[in-house]
Length: 113
Image 1 (cartoon, rainbow, N blue to C red):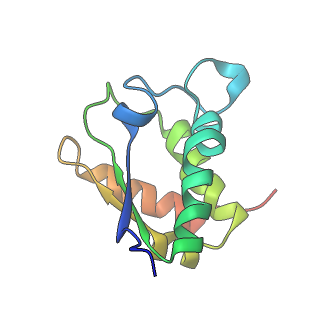
Image 2 (image 1 turned 120 degrees about the vertical axis):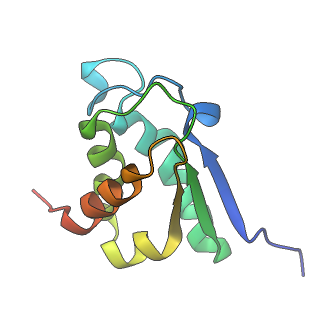
């Protein structure tokens, strides 16, 4: 049986952009929608399949628009459930520790349209 990683690490600055943008792709580069579709969702599906967690490293960026965070993490919660998302994702933010609470709120409060 092959060894499965305990968790996948996604460093937003390292694996996506150090200048995350706004909510939607049509609003400019490095949007929350682009991050969700190209980076977070494929890794999330892999983590579900491998029964492991994802550590999201929020550090080393120029900062985050609330719309980026809501679209990326709230968007994932709209596709799955808050329970599944929160049991799969872990967050690290030494630069701005309050971001973690903010993101968890977006996940819990995400509503489908």
